[in-house]
Every structure is written in C-alpha cells, then in structure tokens.
Image 1: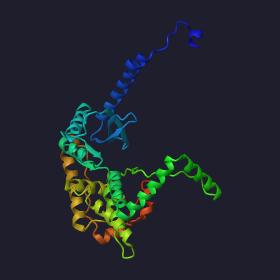
Image 2: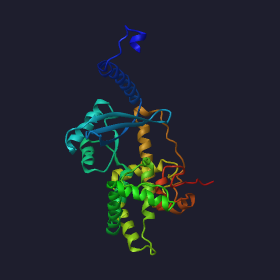
Image 3: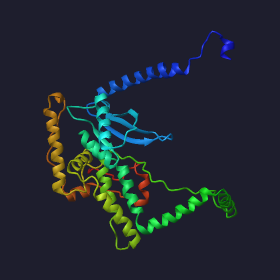
Image 4: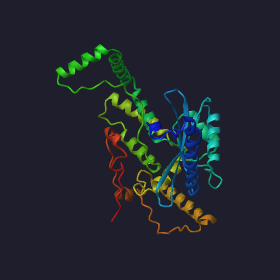
Length: 342
C-alpha cells in the first residue's frame, strides 16, 4: 500500500531500529535518569534476579530516592543478562559495577540496599560494603509462612491436595467429568489450582519492625489452641524472631519507625530502649546540622516529653488484625493506627 501511495518511500529496516532508533532513545532516557539521580541527596537500591521463558537469567537493579518535593522517584537502572554462576563474588562484582557506573555513592558511602534473604546475595552485599542492608519483609514473611506450612500434619495434607490437583491437570477426561459434576450440583465452575509460594506486599521500612512485633503478638500460643495450631504458630514465630536482629539493622528500623508519625511513640519498646532511639535520632540530627553541606537544616529543640510506657499505651491505640486479614495489609488503614493526645 505504501509503495502505491509513494513509490520512492522506503520503510525503515529492522537494522535501522535496532542500531539507530532504539540506542538513541536509550541514550536520551539514560541522560535524563542520570540528571535526576544527581539531584538526590541519598539513594537506596533494590535488586533481584529472575529467569525468562527462554531460561535466561537476568539481574535487575532499581534506584529509589525522595526528591525536593517529598515525592518518591523510582528508576530501573539495569536489567542485565547474568550468565555467570550466582556466587557471592560474582554478584558483589555486579553490584559494585552498577554503583560505580551510575555514581550512586554519596559522601563516600554506597547506597542502602534491599534484597531477598538468599545467602549468596546477603554475602554479596556484605562484600560490596553497601549499608544498611534491609532484607525484603515480604520475602521474610513468605519464608516464615512456608516454615509454618511444613509442620508435618499440614505438609501431609497439602501433599494429598497437590496430588489430587496434579491428577486433574494431567487428565482431560477427569477435568471434563469434574465440570459436569459441578453443573449437576449447581456449583460454580471452578478450576483446580496448584498453590504457588509467593509474596506480593511490600511495606515501607518504617513499618517493618511494628509489623513484626504485631505478628509475634498474634502468634502467641493460647491455652485454647489445639496442637496443630500451636505447632504452626510456633514454627512461624520462631522463624520471625531471628529476623532483623542485627544491632545496626535493628537500630535503623527503630529510627525509621520513630520518624513515622504512625509509630513515633514506639509503644512496643520499654522506656530505656525508647529513649535510646530518640537520643540516637537527636544525635544524628545534630551531626547533620554541623555538616558544612547542610547549614540550612534547622534542628528544633523541644522540652523532653519522652513518653513512659504507660503514657505511650494511653496515647496509642493499636488495632491488631487477625491473621486471615493479613492479606489486606497496605490497602486502606495501616495495621497500627496512632492517635495523638489532645
């Protein structure tokens, strides 16, 4: 049709797009992202690997920062083919190259980083010197839940269910009979699905410690719990208790929670621990004020009104959802609601 309309016009070739148009667009986007990153005072990155349908492995790195208008900006910096073995050394080398090429260091320090809890990436981050390293809470919660599902009685039941589902997936005649029986019994026409361990919710860093404490309280074994429920609660609780216990990471999480208006009274801490968190924040603010590059920062001094345990409990209302409602976290009201005193 184009040849009829304009015989002299030649359609751009595949080579033209792959060697000229796409690289030109990529360069423009890269320059724009680099300019935006240069405006950030501090940057955090997240990284994860995934496998394509062609069984090729990729590692993606995304940068996050808060701009001058207090809006979060996110940029996927790289989605790189990673054909090497996923050893800690190779992953650390890749992280170092990314941080260097995108100039993500600030004040001689690498960016904060969040990853899953795989041992190779944990070691890679440590070798790279990136800090703080906060494990993905969604992945942590998923691991703890899977630990609860591995309780022998539950594991055996799930194994039987999976075998039934596998049978129907492999037999077209059985699937047809199931559909007919559903119609005869006036049941919805549902297909059998195999369970897939996954995680979807991604809480902010200030929510991690309050949410962990809320979950541990929910998972306390009650006298009315039967043996199966007690075993599941204990398995999940024991896994969660050992997460985020590193002194530096714990301090970082507590400071983030204290700076969040929803959790600033830190009602789940004792008086001594709460005061220590506030003191560390005050020291960090004073250090920031003394920095020659931050002379415009003003630290407001207020009377010492650090709440005691009783005051914190009176000033704070904690709405703790039951475990089945945890899937709704992040949608609507926060799980811990803080009401200010009048």
